[in-house]
Amino acid sequence: MNLRCGIVGLPNVGKSTLFNALTNSDKAQAANFPFCTIDPNIGIVSVPDERLNNLAKVSNSKKIINATISFVDIAGLVKGASKGEGLGNKFLSHIREVDAIIHLIRCFDSKDIQNVNPTVDPIRDLEIIETEMKLADLDSIQKRLEKNNKKNIEDKQLKILKIVQNSIDNEGDLSLLKKQFDKKLINQSGLLSIKPKIFVCNVDEKSIQNGNEYTKKFMTKYGKENTLIVSADIENQINQLENDEKKNYMEMIGLKNVGLDLLIQKGYKILELETFFTSGPEETRGWTIEKNSTAPKAAGEIHSDFEKGFIRAETVSYEDFISNNGWVNSKTNGKMRLEGKDYIVNDGDVLNFRFNT
Image 1 (cartoon, rainbow, N blue to C red):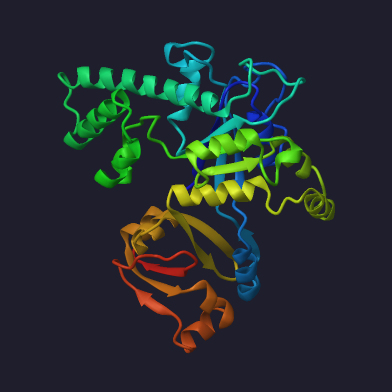
Image 2 (cartoon, rainbow, N blue to C red):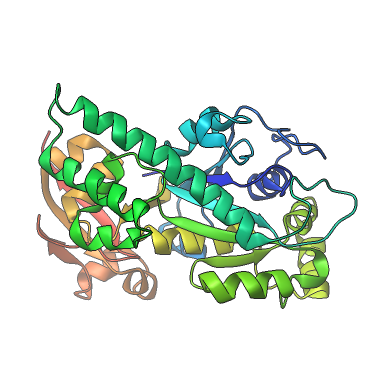
């Protein structure tokens, strides 16, 4: 599966700059005026995973193929977007297509970069965006409930719509939906306000390590679990450097990890994803699946025929594959297992599928 994350926020908070940094490109126009981005920019990025290189060495693979993640740079949102203000309707339709939302929030002062609001206030800015998504959901829910008289909605979907409507009206906790309904059912509702979220506080260089008054205020309210501190401008500069220069510069400013790595880690965590591998002489490849996926479901990520005709999966843990120097020794030393349809794949499993077509 290819994870899609949409970068959203008010105009001029650095969305296009962050997008260019994450995708190591200049695809997104970044300029000092609102609505610089109109149509969404999409960039597909390889998910860094040092385990792939180690597996490829053992298997003497001709090529390495990383799992991928897509970032979507979506037009800036303004108050009233749910009623069509700014590029609201376009913005909201693009959000419906992503798996997770990256809220980019301005947490820096600058006389050079326009701000759509007179002051810097990350909590207020996030609330503007969240309110517009909730208002759009209420409008969508109302229309769908009215249509239900003519075209019946599935009972569980109907329950989700009514719960979300009630939660928004009464400022309830939307995260409780996950305890009541399957994730696939929730996603099928297409509602914006219940999509998984990552909060990215965009700071200046001096605030990279310890944050600032804005990030502290924000984290006091929203916590640290889904929040990152990143400087979009610095990330963009880093990506323009060669490897040695990049390493030296990061050490100089005290930056341990680039924003891409941090975002992917957060994304995998909140979406409950993990990675399994296939490895042989032709290629070593990483595959993204949901946690608690069965072996046939994992096989289906490679090809639908693998899932339909699944027989068994030859399975070795990453650690055993490396320490036993590949498939042959893993089998000889009793580290390879034959798993059936009920096997739950673990992160790092190296799999070889047997199937009938």
